Length: 407
Ligand code: GLU
Image 1 (cartoon, helix red, strand yellow):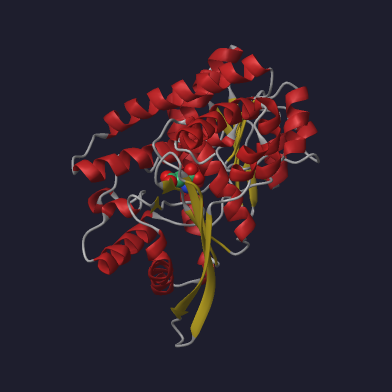
Image 2: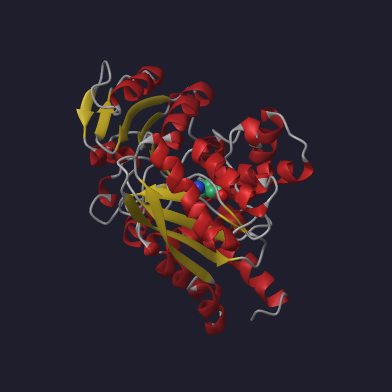
């Protein structure tokens, strides 16, 4: 998918073959075996990856996923998207991504800590505050970030807060980082609704995914937009109430039962049905490949805000474009997370910390500017918003590679 999108962009921008050769594969890909002493005394060996896709604009940047179905191919695609995301937001950062094949639901707290530390033991030579900076992603938490930062600091003999972002505030984190991905997405939805003439206080929203990002955007869109969230889902399925969900109740129910299903005053629906509801805005906030050629035609929403990475396949993109659905593409919509991560890096370097208000104000400026650059590019080239975003981001990366003499 990532390569297909890049080739389409290369065609649009008329990029030379050598440029495409430099961008179609990652610069570096590390695979490590990660041994972990389990609670029962046996040793398990997990497979871990860290991909640096491109670092022409600065140190690579991107999250770490802990997922049972992780593959190096997925990590590679996600690292490519991080490259375009950082370039699009005009951050002095390249793109990277990592992952470990594991099921966090089957690991004890102690095993999770040893896994996190062991992974760093294996990859520490390939990362660092000015080399490649890690962050949370699917099933990785601020606590996991602290274990990893602590391990890296021990190995390098000094405190190295800047080796990763998304840390808790007391351990070198930034105010506002926890909600930043959702908040950034909200700014882009606000801009899109102005463009489409939609009154956000009258909109209905359905959200696929109820992790950090999904639950946060559910709360914020009611709080700030006054919108009505009618459906949310997690990996086990979804809940729906046409009159609006009580999000705090759903959060509480999920904390108690590990799923949103059967939250009070809701009816159960499937993960796919969430996306096909007759609502104004749908927000995929889970995993890749949620919207394919099989369900894209059934989408009724006016705005599709991609808070997940890679939720829409290229075939689905075409169907959505022809049906007039306004897609806010992933590496624009969910860029609030990495933008606040960049702010966290800056604060770590300065050892001077900002308030949440300062973080959000700067975040809003960056997201709003990027949104309008993408909108302008898509109109200018007469392409969908995703290709507009590619045009802006790839041009910046290519310009820097040419200036540095890489091509
Ligand atoms: N994992 C997030 C993303 O996909 C954040 C990455 C970061 O902060 O480095 O954008």
